Amino acid sequence: MPAAQQAQAGRPLPFPPRERPARREPLGLPVLRIVCWQLALVLVFLAAGGPWPLATVLVPMAVALLGCTAVRVRGRWLSDELALRVLLVLRRRERDLPGTAGTRLLLATLAPGASVGTATLAGTPSGVVSRAEELVTVLRPAGTGAAALAELALSGSWLGDAAEPGQPAVRFQLVVHRGPRQADQARAWLVVRAVRDPRFADDAPLLVAVSNAVRKLHRRLKRTGMAAGPLTALTEEEILATLAALTHTGPGRAAIREDRRYWRAGPIAQAGLRLSGLGTRSPVARVRLLHHVLAAVPGTACTVSVTLPGHTAVVRVAATTDAAVDAAAGRLLRTRPPEIHLERMDNQHAAAVAATLPIGGTS
Image (cartoon, rainbow, N blue to C red; front, side, top):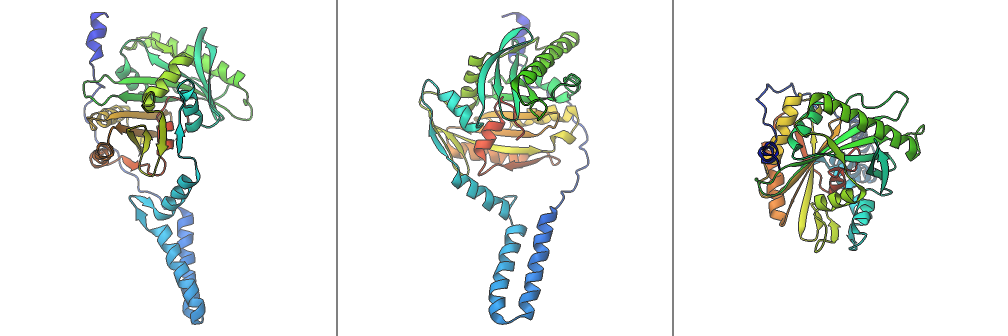
């Protein structure tokens, strides 16, 4: 390895200077929730003016309606919490992954209907993931350029107009992963996503759009001289291997299971947190926050996914014990910047795992 690359190998994600936080916007209250409160008030008035048998029915109904829509449990409305628990109970939560086709089954479990194949993109055989919502390919920096790729992707300036006129819309996803040791080098992937819509329902136009976007990215990177060097597309086999590595599945970890507070792969417990507010930050603050998240959870593996340009973000932590996962999640919740909102995705950890894989998606 050249000396320059060796020097870069241990490079952490950039730690930009501090900037003044942006004004925090007040959270809006859903209209439907206000309507429910008004309905509860109406029920109380009806009970007050009616006979006692009617009151014994209406008052408990009003209390239940008010409780479900006004009480928050761990930062989430009680009505939302109950709905998510019901959905968790109804869906299949356990599965064994066979050795030969385990990763494909894992993908089908986390993203129903998704499949991995091979296509020629920008003149190179590349792996692609076809989903109901989109078709994606996965790029990685040649060498050790995770920090440079993350910095450029979060700046947003070179991703905005990757789509050609009259072609499917093109979006992106940045995935950054760091192992449990602080000395572990961060790795990054950039997912190029062609969005499926009624005009472009088949894979063929989406492949053209992705191929054009990859060519445009290569030209831009060549002009800007990104420190990471060129981006190379993962093959079909490399995509499957990456999915297995990021989900911590494989030999001895073939049994996956979801419960309310964790998603498990064998003995590895994992939990996701939804991160909101990243899109309102400046590029400097976005990179700084990414650095903070990766540094805040020593001893646990950490994966961060950011959809671009919307900047919807999900963080996933993984460790060999539930206590280590809870400690890491708690540390992130306690140390978040005041303008950023973090919410643990209890009852939704399978969705969190899917959102932090380089397979696209909007979660």
